[in-house]
Image 1 (tube, rainbow, N blue to C red):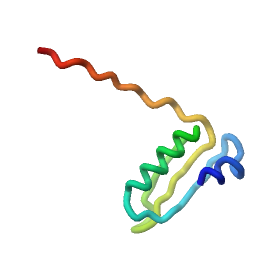
Image 2: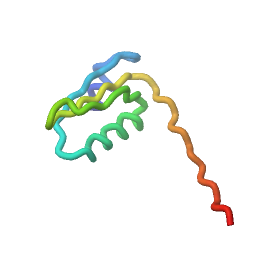
Image 3: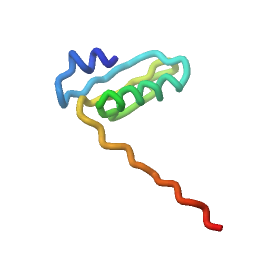
Length: 74
């Protein structure tokens, strides 16, 4: 998947990637890999009973918001 995005998709283009899933954990791993590689995950859809579709744009993603935990009040 990353080789396709790195070598065959031009900057600012969108790729639609379909793959078979066994469990949802692989979908989350794919989303994490896409973010860490510096691409934007635009959509993630269950296509049918066994296939999943990812829509990825080759642009830098927006930074994830940082949620600060506050100390409990006593």
